[in-house]
Amino acid sequence: MILRLTRTYRLVSLSLLAALLAGTAAQAPRLLAQDSQTQTTPDEGGPQSDSGSIILKKKKDADEPPPPPAPAEPKVKNPNNETYSIRVDVPVVTLDVNVILDKTHQFVPGLKAGNFQVLEDGVPQTVTSIRTTQAPITAVMLLEFASNSWYAINDMENASYVFFRSLRPEDYVAVMTYDLRTHIVSDFTNNKDVVGQSLQSLTIPTFSDTNLFDALYETLDRVSRIEGRKYIILIGTGRDTFSKLTLDKIIAKVKSTPNVTIFSIATGAFIQEIAEAQGGMGMGASIRNMDYLQAQNQLKTFAQLTGGLYFAPIFEGELPEDFAQINNSIRNQYVLTYRPTNTRNDGSYRKIKVSLVDNEGKPLQMVDEKHKPLKYSVIARDGYRAKLPVE
Image 1: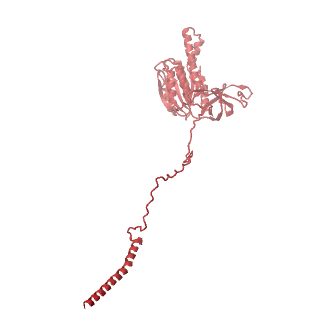
Image 2: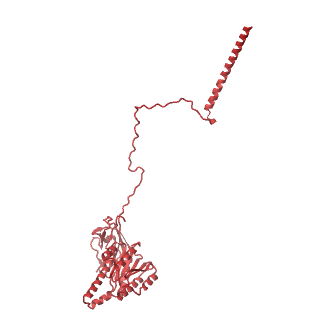
C-alpha cells in the first residue's frame, strides 16, 4: 500500500513538471515578439535604442605623424573684384580776352582758336576751346567821395551817371564810396531806381582823406565771394593818403583775386590841364604834378593787371564814348580755355601774354575796306596765381 502511493505520487509529480515545462515554452515566443515590436515600431513616439554592437575608437599611436597642412590659397591682386579710382586734379585756366580796334573802340568778332597765341611764363599754351559771350554784368561802382576838390567830385558824379544810364535791366550793380573809410551806399541790385537814389544821395562829403588802397582791398575781398565774372568801375583821382596797405600789397591783392576786371576813370584831368597850361612853376607845383601823375599811373596799373581799361577824360563829352567802350568790352569778349603745361600747385604767380597770329604763326594784320592797316589792342589779364596744394 505504501509502495502504491509512492508510485502514484511520483506519476503526479512528473505530470505536473511536464505541464509546467510545456506552458513556459509556449509563452516564450510571445514575449520576444512583443519586445521585437516595441523596438522596431517607430510610430509609438518613445525613445529608440540602438541594439547594435558598441565600437570603441582606436587610440592614436604616439609615433603616428600629424596630417599634412592644407595647401595655401593663391594670392590674387584684386580678390573681391573691387574697383578703385584715382582723382587727378588737372588745372584749367579760363581767360577773358577782348580785341578792340584802337580808333573806333569796336569789338573785333570772328576770331578762331588758332588766332590766339597764349604764353604762360614765356611757354606757348594750346587753346582747347574758345567762345564769345554777351552776358549781364555784375559790377561795383567804387567812387571817391571826399572834400578835397570840387572838380574831382563833379567829374565823379558825371562819370557815374553816364555809366548808370548804360545799365540794362538784368545788370546787378552795387555802389560804394570811400574817403577815410569805405561806405556801402547800396548793395547789389538790378533795380535802377535804387542805384539812382544812391547816386543822388552823394551831396556833401565829409573827410578829405582818400584811402584808395584800403577801399579797393575791401571791395576785392567782397566781390571774391561772388561767383562768376565781376567788374569794378573805379572813379577817382587815384590819390591815397592814409591807407594801412602799401602799393605793393594792394597790387598783390589785385593779382591774386580771380575773375575781377577793373575799369578806372581818372577825375580832375581838366583842372590838371589848366594848371599845366598856366605854366605852374615852383617846387610845390612840381610836387603836385608828380603826385597826380603817380595817382594816374596807379589807376592805369590796376586796370592793366586785370585786363581792364583806363581813361582820363578832360571834358565831360568824352564820357559817353569811354563808357560805350567799357560796355562793349564787358559785354562782348572771347573766353579762352587751356590746360597749362605747368601743372604744379605751388601758389606761384604765372605771367600771361596774349597776342593774335595768322595761320603761319606771324602777327595778325588787320585792314579796313580800303586795305589800310588797322591797329588793335588785345586786352587780357596780366596773369594768375596758381592754387596751393591745400586748396
